[in-house]
Image (cartoon, rainbow, N blue to C red; front, side):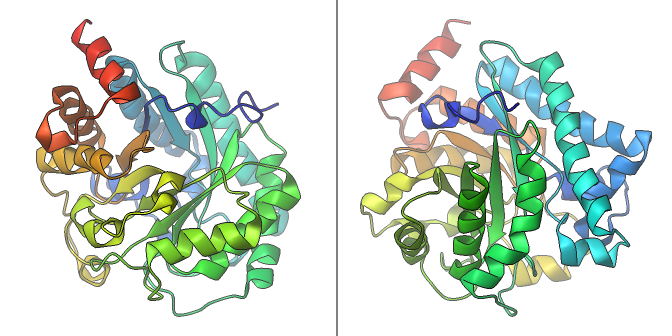
Length: 335
């Protein structure tokens, strides 16, 4: 049974960290080959499983140090049918690997969770196509049918919710939400933005959030933004509006490069962790409901540490606010 599915602490406005760029860390820091960025393939060996668990440990240590919760996402971003076929996985093998990923995190939670650091397990769902490009698109019905398989396999585990990540057009997001609704599992949707603050398909983030909500009766628990540098979000957020209240999380890229530039890069651009932390924390000045922060491509535990140091410092550079963020800063100051 899921520990939090019927009462998600992510909706309680308490602060949560996320883990960072798993695939980029494995490739560039650990020297692991990951065909198609499919990190779940490592779960077939003890060494591969240990590498993934070490990744979770680094971020959980940061969360426990700062007395906040942590959201850990399964390494199943590529564990859907089309990507699995490329790696030789049958349908039953994909179901097994999705479930195995959750078992690993459930065991990890039993060892690492504390009252001050609750651990929420999210079953990761990735796009059917490229996370950076929206060239091949599905209708909402096609997207629901495609993603239903993976969501159903994750729902039958101890996962607390599922999360759709790096989505770059609206119809796929709607289909994912409809599939989660059919499976009766909570879901978050995270859109990828370009340097102009829009989805690769051209729609604005505001359009993406509002249309997804309108066509799914607001079933998604919340929305997030990921795989874009904090400096790329300004144009998307400057319009203001109630739709911003639906965004609870940001998992930003370390690099300021565009997705096209990153696709051509041979070396990791991990940016400036201290600057990254300041700019991520400053988003609280616009996203008043943002209580989930972390990293995506190119980020590691240094970036997570920098975010929380910036939040604890408060002040103008981190968009100091009242409420739970102010309480967090006060609590940490007394440690």
